[in-house]
Image 1 (cartoon, one colour):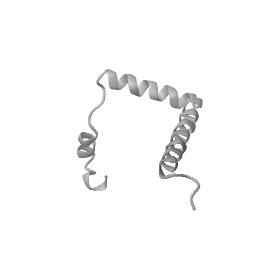
Image 2 (tube, one colour; image 1 turned 180 degrees about the vertical axis):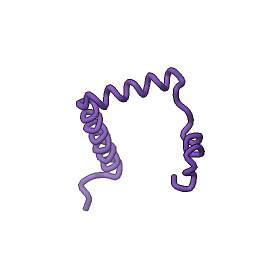
Image 3 (cartoon, helix red, strand yellow; image 1 turned 60 degrees about the vertical axis):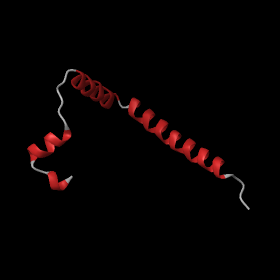
Image 4 (cartoon, helix red, strand yellow; image 1 turned 90 degrees about the vertical axis):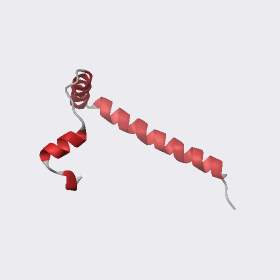
Length: 66
């Protein structure tokens, strides 16, 4: 005998996942240095100061390690 339907289990699993994501978000926004670093990184992306990861991997010669 089951207490929950398959659909209810699916919804519950999704709710748990969303709660985990919310807790992670709360942890991040409480870390002032991390928030500052994220803002800097986003600004650098907007300014075009980034490059594709595959380019960096090739430059570092670590293709087989990733």
